[in-house]
Image (tube, rainbow, N blue to C red):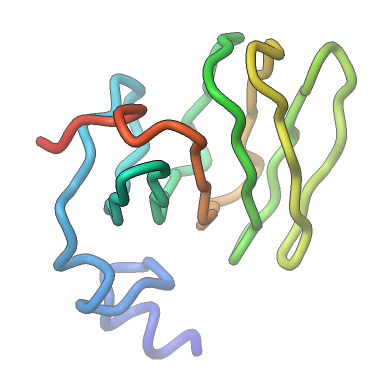
Length: 118
């Protein structure tokens, strides 16, 4: 797996993911690729260890950590998430994140307009 990640520019995602439309993310160090439906969006995020997501709120969000470690604060409660861990953020609940390593997550949003394509 480590050899494949080197070939894929350090990300866990192969070209079939990186070939999807890229989302416009306003936070430096975060990029993502989008699958969109009439009711939801799924985004494969690749996040550098230097990135931080400030407190914010939006539609409901479910996610799973594919690689790496991050601290996620949901509604004032901070938890550490690692590979295989999943989380759920209800609609309008304030949350933020700090990335301790390079992190790969798959997030699903309950809003087909959550992110715009680049």
